[in-house]
Image (cartoon, rainbow, N blue to C red):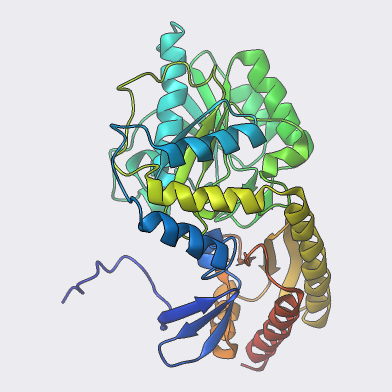
Length: 391
């Protein structure tokens, strides 16, 4: 018999009732150290006082009015994002998947309005994840995501991950855009090297192709910069953002240059909930905290401390772990043993991590995780590894 909740998830056998900082408490009272942060969503930890205050204040005034009217909270957050990024304009969504849909529409409409209606093909990469809508799964193209859901939206061409020569050969007069994650999350914490992003920017410029970055998982301070592409010194034309931007409240966005967004006029896109006062009040507070240079410097310091400990962990368990991947606090442990065995052993010792492709464990703690909790995380990872070795 089917469950009341559609059974599309393989859920872990625990439910949480309270959170504080980097810790969660389950129904049975047991405490867990959360290195998943809701899959990179709870950027400032659970029940962050500043976010609780922003949410509570706005909740007492106004939740929702729809985008039929001006929304001052939305304008404030858009202005902050424009001031701190490459973008000239922002559209707010409720999720990363919705951001992907708009990014696809925006890129195709751009070329249509330029008198190039045949430029509709978007180049994407194996291992990518851009959401679970029909458009987003067509973009990613992996068999496990698309099997049984055809016919797929046409107009996508998947290439091997970060193969620059293949990209150059694939761009034709039908190419609309290149869509890539500067750091693949679901794909196994794989970083596109800075020189590759620079080369990709040059290639797009020379061919009139739009460059779209998906920073849903690696953005909002997680890499140690406000956005991961900043490490390379280049910028996209369009960027998808979600997860951490709301600090746990559902919020997403598409950021774009004035040129890339030039085809999007009144009536070409919309959202009932996107960018409502409640979401944007929380997002503005997240932005205020995370975009601060001193905060980002702390992210990098904590990341170095964590990474050093992970290197020692690998040395202590060479049969289980191979390498550390990532940048800032979007880190991955490449495993030799099945990554799911280590994740499950973590549950036994009170630790939450997130599996990814390529036999990687994702470590995505709150960006403000205290040093003491990093030390606890390393201790618990060691205990989980010891359990796997003893099994």
